[in-house]
Image (cartoon, rainbow, N blue to C red):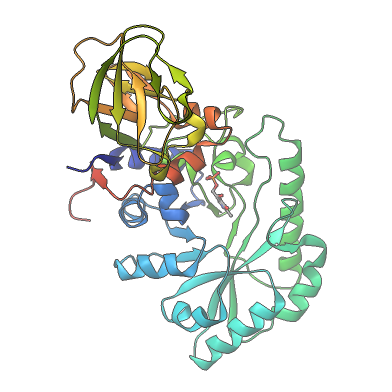
Amino acid sequence: MPSSWIEIDLAALRHNCREAARRLGERTAIVGVVKSDAYGHGMVPVSRELVACGAKFLAVSKYWEARELRSAGIGAPIIVLLGLEREDVEDALLEEVRPVIFRIDHARMISETALGLGRRAMAHVKVDTGMGRLGVPWEDLPRFLDETSTLPGLEIEGVISHFAVADEADKAYCHDQVRCFESVLEAFRERGIPVPYAHISNSAGVLDLPHAHFQLVRPGIMLYGSQPSSELLQPGDLRPVMTFKSRILQLKSMSAGRPVGYGRTYVTPGLSKVATIPVGYDDGYSRKLSNRGVVLVRGHRAPVVGRVSMSMITVDVTRIPDVQPDDEVVLLGSQGGERITAEEIADLCDTISYEIYCNFGKNRHKFFMGGVEGI
Ligand SMILES: Cc1ncc(COP(=O)(O)O)c(C=O)c1O
């Protein structure tokens, strides 16, 4: 038995995928965003489940992630959000992986390689409608299309953009971005370039911006059971997918005035029971949780006392009855009637749930439960 492990509830993942689908009209399909190991949830099993649940496309950041999906036998169309490196283009095209394009030189290089293979690359053009990160700035689109739309090895399968503030309550800027995106699509129409798939919505767009669904939506975080933020106007009915567990490695009675951990930042205020748990910042449990984090033991909340070290934390269990060595400890998830959410941990670490999932998900021991049999 590992000293700490992650449990992934695939039934909850399916529930969340259905919750996304429920928000969509008939002409809109889901791109399951499974980059960064499906936000730490395990890219291959999660992708299998999402495809079985009806996701039409998958999206990853980098080509090697797409290759891993293909090696696992997943045949669904995959969009590579950061585009392709020169050395990967040939393999990617043979595997029918879809590059996102945003640079004229990339578009030319992909077209040439595709022609050499006797194929056409199915590309998604990324347009920056106001995020200011990746994509052709919308003002530069005419020149981009002049240079790329007649490239013989390229077929435009999609046009993609990304929201900057869809998770905030004030949607004014999102509406500006949608208007800009619509004018971008109009520019394609005027040039007679068909766009089978337009997509701009992330989870917040799926939930709060029904007029921005177009032909595809790209939910990530909602599939994993978290609201994109606490400001959503129409939050989803979502179930957490990830649980992070460990066991008590040692249980100690300590008299008053005894220091706990590096730096002696905590000193027992009275006769105390302190449990040592074999989880530390190497397992993604941030050092910012020193003297701030909370775990669950026997269905009760137990505070982290002292500093989080590389592979251990110490928690105060003085007030919890019957605690024993080897008792299960929940660092994320529920036990008894209590729950610790990724949002609660993220608040303590001054970050967002996304980062908590990615960090915990690096744990090498991952167990998948509730999968659909036979896939
Ligand atoms: C381009 C792109 N689309 C979609 C998503 C999914 O966003 P979310 O997890 O907020 O649904 C991301 C995530 O960062 C992204 O970078």
